[in-house]
Length: 295
Ligand code: NAD
Image (cartoon, rainbow, N blue to C red):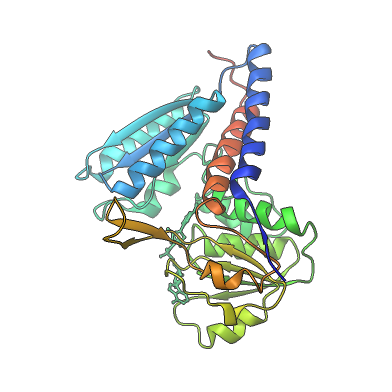
């Protein structure tokens, strides 16, 4: 067996093209362009690249992006005032606070201050809580987990009853992904750095999501033949042979897994593009819900 390579870039491009079309229709109806405020604190190189890519995608799709870049020594009060200001601005439909925030900032408090209806990343405690309750629909589902589900659905539209194993339990990837899979009726096992016997647990997975941030953690002998494998990991490792001095590595040993899995995401070109596409989608949804018609 050779795994189907799940082309995240292609699936994301299709989603983005639909979004661009919907934004054109909004303009014809004289509705304002969706507005996304990005908030970047400090100069973490990876965060800067992520925010830059999000802003570029906004520009391509017709989303108005308003970038706020604050110095690394920004104090809690200053950031809270900015969030209050963005919450109150009717032209801003979505607010993205790039994580992680510097140590002096209380991240949970900042996320809690966001208007949950502008929380396009889906990290506000109300949105996280609503995702955890099967009876409620969150205003927004976090972008990476939402993208992961789309990738899985592209090869397996119905996952009811399948065994899903998620490696990683962070609030932004692992846990919401597990909740989303559970809401879609998979039987979910969540693993983390204290889990014992990871290879055996992984081998039972019909769907394996690797979100640990550990380069090539998942090996070929961890894979059940035919399984769907989603590689979320993005880790920079030193590489003297590369021009940049580093290369980006995923959480799976991709080449050795391809002959065994049923489907697998590449890295790059798998989950990453979907995260941005889902952010754009959430911003459009936020604008659509807004009654505001100010230009
Ligand atoms: P995190 O560090 O907050 O969480 C990692 C989780 O993995 C923790 O729950 C930890 O217990 C678990 N873990 C770590 N090592 C493990 C091991 N050896 N065995 C089992 N569990 C282990 O990271 P995160 O924010 O959840 O991100 C995870 C990875 O996904 C990172 O590489 C990150 O860069 C990447 N990421 C990618 C995207 C994307 O769009 N592709 C988006 C977000 C995060």
